[in-house]
Length: 444
Ligand code: GDP
Ligand code: MG
View (cartoon, rainbow, N blue to C red):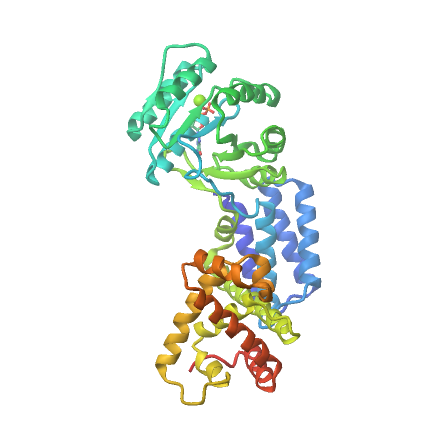
């Protein structure tokens, strides 16, 4: 799948790894190679130009996080920008929250792969443990209905059919037939139109009766960047719908189809990667791009950068605390984080009331208390978390009830908060903050 693009991208990664540093010339070469790979997979030239500019800007101007090399950062920027043009974060399906059955309507021009896709989706959801049903409103090609029935039989999934020539009537009867007996109903359609307008009218008529939870436009990946027009017209008419990109196997133009569909703002839900029923994958741009780049090569880098970013965020929080902005969220998060690193002993020894001989049981007990505090804090309103001083009698009662704890637990948490806040302003507190910032609270 997208072998040529993958090949070029991997060459880029190898090149970055092979040089001792990235100078202007190397950066230009890297970007050229990425451009070639994308254009060969039919990605629109505007998208390629914009991507190149962003890559150059980011790699040259962005502040590189501490502990990360320019080479590592360059790889991560390439990854992020490719993920961005290929669709960003994947969508989520909320099947369990919807009333039964969750209805998926498939539309798309003739030959795009709808009937095959209907079978694939039935397979996919059945694998996940759902009761699935299939039906087809294709009155245009009776063979298409037979094709789907055969797929349904092979999967052991119920299929609804009736000798009827009106798609709307078939849809109505099929809905009655399945009712809430199944979890998911997948509806295949004729797609007898070759242009978008006719296709979308066909969709609207059916959607009125079916009221689908999700309408998926099936696009044939071999059309490359031409997918833009189809996806755009669809996204404008059905903004909550999604895209299924079929036939990604064996075409070099798949990058074009994916990026063109993503550029319309529509979300791609699945990809079809072969003729067989099991050739279906959820579309997840981060892992898709990871695979193209060679996940083994970049996973470590991405993880490292993620960790640095997290600890940067933590430092920023600590800076705020040092400035006197100390909230209940800060308290609980600092405790949790120090507890994870095994540094509670050091904190305890600095708090008033504890000496240097802190028994292990005291630490265990504090750990248990931190867990309880977390539950209590979670049942507070945002206002309360940020400004605990407003928490008086009735709020305490409500919070205790909401968190399943006693009022005395809530009072105890508030008392600790006030104490800690006061301590932070003292000499000991400033010392503690320094230790937190330097990460000196690891280990007991
Ligand atoms: P429909 O007219 O939209 O219902 O399209 P069909 O489901 O009948 O598929 C048209 C052709 O595309 C058939 O030959 C399928 O086997 C083929 N096809 C569908 N999906 C894929 C896919 O993901 N990969 C490949 N290689 N072929 C596919
Ligand atoms: Mg069909």
